[in-house]
Length: 77
Image 1 (cartoon, rainbow, N blue to C red):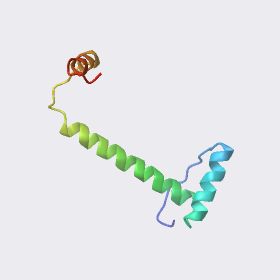
Image 2: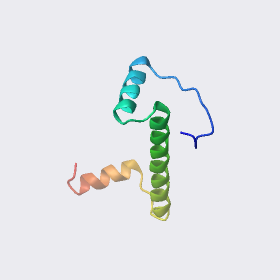
Image 3: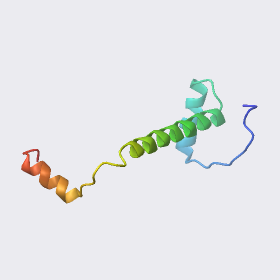
Image 4: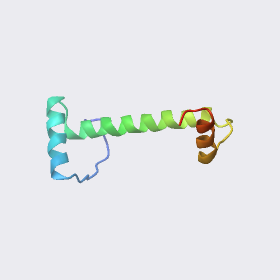
């Protein structure tokens, strides 16, 4: 934990906080370490999502209505 340099106060519902403490204890981590790990995972997922969007930037767009019509015309719905 010594490499962490900022503090924040986070509020949880009591049941969520209890579950978080239990999860941290079962993983032999502090609650702070567990939250840090979860936030990092969330940011990695965001980065992957943004990369996927960037890869598809040149694809043509289709409206939801057109998509439904296409699915219907091909017997999918």
